[in-house]
Length: 395
Image (cartoon, rainbow, N blue to C red; front, side, top):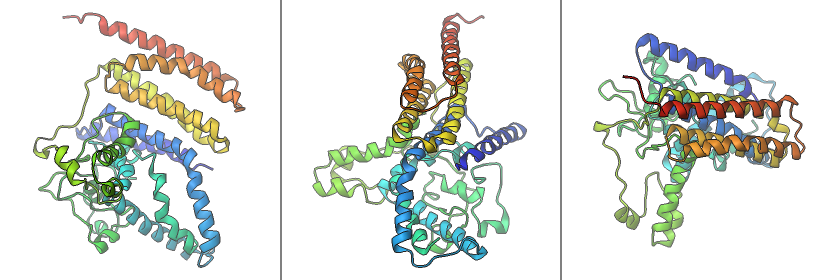
């Protein structure tokens, strides 16, 4: 059973509540394009998980069967308590090294790229974390065994000393030098206090969210590939054979000396920091929002049924989702080719359904008709939007 399915409506309910809190308190912690980009990364991550979860499952099973030191009973309460604390300990080191080593940061950076901070940030997850993330939880197999993303909750007194709270997790998402690479815990802040990575949120140093090399894009695919691409370019450009390999495993931000001299990386001045944004008309915002809502519905359905699919239909489903989310990202960025890409996306909807049916996937009888109607209505709305934006504005 995929428990993410049960979590989806609660996440969106929390987002709705936070939007009401924004309105009530006169804050503006959400921007449509940024929120859709975060949610798109989350949808892409969960969809990708259908293809990649087998790696961890096989590895953990083999480790437990061949290397387990003891066999713990799931009927004992202390085993559950121990597993909970042990998991958070493993999470701390996974999270910490995800900030301290280039190749691990390449996967984790997605979660930090948003320059806003709200509940949608919690859903902004990587699609490539499966490559190395499973390693950090192997000790659990051998032994045998969200609310923080908001600006509306202040410091919580003594609670801050033991648990991760919105305040000390805001620190974790900051790009201010005093806050960077701090507060890695998932549930308990005691790991950070114990290992020297704790930093309190300071009243005199307001948090600036984001990463020091801005994503400057609403594209969820590029969000997952940005850091890998930078590392690849540096590895390709360096004249040192050793550095071509070493760069991937060095501390985050390390670059070969010859590359750093020839291609200096200028980081933004936080004193003059401005969030990345692309102005959009109200009509374009509504169109992007409605298209994304469709992908949330289809992605949720895919999570419910995709666990039983073979690899080929899963690849088809993932490709359809990824291309659609990429297209929405291009639309939000007002790319010159966005309209042509959107038309291509609508045209490819029916062939995607036909490919699933050809591979033996039994779809509801109404599904092809629903998709055809959706594509037609989207096309009509798209053409109507283009026509309206060409009309002269009234004085």
